[in-house]
Amino acid sequence: MDGNRLKGKVALVTGAGSGIGRAVAAVFAREGAAVGINYFRNEEGARETLRHIEISGAEGELLKADVSKPGDAESIVTQLKNRFGKIDILVNNSGIGSESTPDRVTEISLADWDRVMDVNLKGVMLTSKFVLPGMMERKQGTIINISSIRGLLGNPNLASYCASKGGVVLLTRETALDYAGFGIRVNCICPGFVNTEMFRGYIEKQEDPGLALKVFEEMSPLNRVGEPEEIAKAVLFFAGDASSFVTGTALPVDGGYTASGARSIL
Ligand code: NAD
Image (cartoon, rainbow, N blue to C red; front, side, top):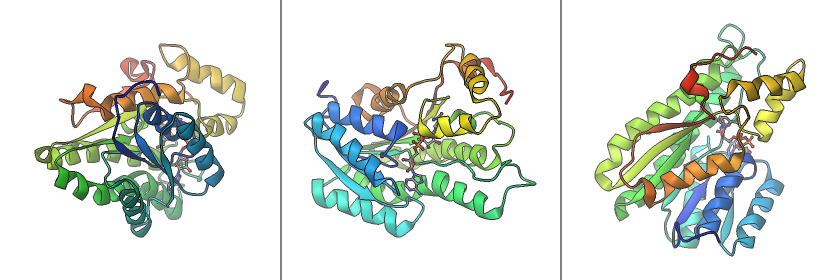
């Protein structure tokens, strides 16, 4: 363990079988939290995350669910509470991009639009819906939603993704207001370009992936893409006492990308 910043806490991290979710689960475990590892299809990835947690000397629970399905979302909350008695921290990290190319209003299929909105936005609402009553009873808790710089700035060919992530920013602010009276804090993080499977898949789809990666690196003033652990460190800030007076915020963690108002050229 690195420290005791989350000692005795129980966290639920959605989409924790890969990328940012796995990094969050691992950082939480190193800080002493027990972690519920939600996954959907990637059981092998979730088991790998569990190994990271156990190496830290913490406990973890594998929780299979499609977060866009109410029954699934309710069931993983119940399972985690049955094992550890409570949930102190919820990280809504699961997310997908559209399978339609291009993801534009005139071209996207309704099925693709619905799927992106269901996972990226409805999923955040549903998991929160089932976790919040326990937090309200205990008059404490923190929720961290993973939006995107695409929830703050538009980007050509990302209609459903931008709309869903923009919704996450405003749902964060609205939820923060509704539950502040219970001592519950709700914040969101807007990652920039982060070196995960999702990002690498997007790069691979470009005509010249090598050039695309270079362009993405140069779009951030820090001149590189981020690593999942760098997002996880910001999530830890919101999860722990260091952010005790912070609620309803949307923090870009993007190497300075949004500071410049830069526009994607891909
Ligand atoms: P990722 O693909 O590794 O992680 C997404 C996770 O969500 C996967 O583990 C996947 O299995 C899970 N998931 C997908 N559908 C699900 C469902 N229906 N129910 C439960 N889980 C489901 O990619 P990542 O980059 O680690 O993405 C994590 C979050 O960060 C996403 O919300 C993504 O939109 C956001 N984000 C990523 C970047 C980036 O550059 N990588 C930038 C901004 C925002």
